Image 1 (cartoon, rainbow, N blue to C red):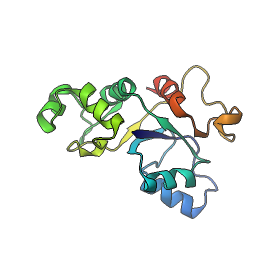
Image 2 (tube, one colour):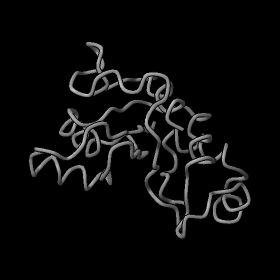
Image 3 (spheres, rainbow, N blue to C red):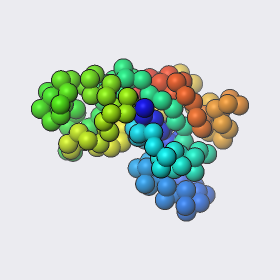
Image 4 (cartoon, helix red, strand yellow):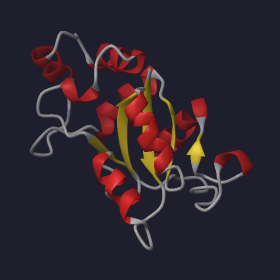
Length: 155
């Protein structure tokens, strides 16, 4: 299983240890997104920065759309099916995305891929509120499967 983490809040008045954890997660700007595996280490990092990000489990079709539209290689070239076929054991982006969501492969195993996705702000209403958790009507924290709805609005 893989998580997708999206940075929601900026850098003003952020504690140094939280800022360092954000750098380790490669979430340097608002609306940047990363796909990470579900491990104990990453789970601890997410819990540390929970007041600045939102996260949840990503579906395979949403990840394939994210890779197709927002995934970049070194030199800002887009990721295509032919590139995935020539540089991995998968035939196309959909198979690669399915393997990443299952947790059998990391997204970063693809050669020369940029580890982050630069997303636009969510259309149709924006964030629900960047100072409250998702459980009480805000945008921060764990979303579960509803992260896919947010990602579709941001792609």
